[in-house]
Image 1 (tube, rainbow, N blue to C red):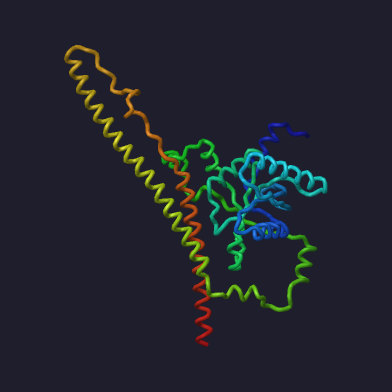
Image 2 (cartoon, rainbow, N blue to C red):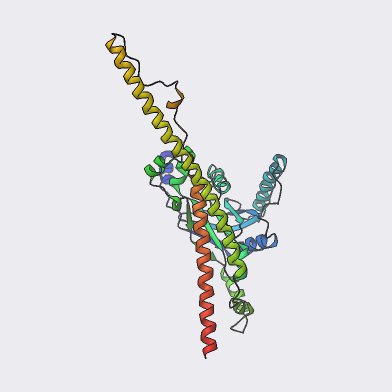
Amino acid sequence: MARSFLQVAATEEAAPPLRVVQMEGLVILKIIKHCKDHSPSLVTGQLLGLDVGSVLEVTNCFPFPMREEDEEIEADGANYQLEMMRCLREVNVDNNTVGWYQSTLLGSFQTVELIETFMNYQENIRRCVCIIYDPSRADQGVLALKALKLSDAFMELYRSNNFTGEKLREKNLSWVDIFEEIPIKVSNSALISAFMTELEPDSPVTQCDYDRLQLSTSSLMERNMEFLIECMDDLSLEQQKFQFYYRSLSRQQAQQQAWLQKRRVENMSRKAAGEDPLPEEDPSNPIFKPLPEPSRLESFLITNQISNYCNQINGVSGQSFNRLYLMKALHEE
């Protein structure tokens, strides 16, 4: 029996939440090559695949051409995307957009631009992800690849463009609730898995294994510390904005109380003289104009970035201590 349109719509509304992003190995290799070839410049590209239940399958991708910020060039970029997807459709390759990927430098990706890109994608794609790859950490033997999406609560708040303290408390939203990280599962066909098995070297130890034992991590630690200090300075500036706002608010409230006290005394005199009292509120008075509260979005993003840098520093220092203890044990023997 055919279902009605309302039944189909209700089924779509009850779609399961996104649990995992399944990426083919070839897609990951394409992303790594594109990002590494243009490093330290930041690049982006399109993700193609299928949305199946709670799994988002990424089966193909293609890079965006590097361009400057210009309206005509942006239009050419959109035409390039459409032409690429048309060509992929003609050769029977998945051409459904499921998100995009972008490179980053030491995890500095949590920006307002990323949120705006997410919201633009959400207008046409109900469930999309952003794959973040950090080529600067590849030298440390780390595959810095993660899949992110915006939380539903944050998107609802972003559409209202109201990031005041009262609204955030009402929604119970904190800085950790902006992004959601989705687990990534690498999938390869049986033929590719068999081919990779044939390519495995006979030697159990490779040069990459030796590279992981390098004791020098000063450059990576220094850059993380530099970025962390910059974020702390930015957060301090945001806090100064809020301090100025609360000082202005206290000053305005004091002026309002003084004006009300003066108006009440004046009304008592008018009442004694048999005259009508004046209203105790005057909307035309500047002291009754509400002060706009600064948005907390920027401070939330900076706090997220600080947490990311701290986690990276913790990971690098932890690995360094492990290597040092290993070398100490080898010397003692």
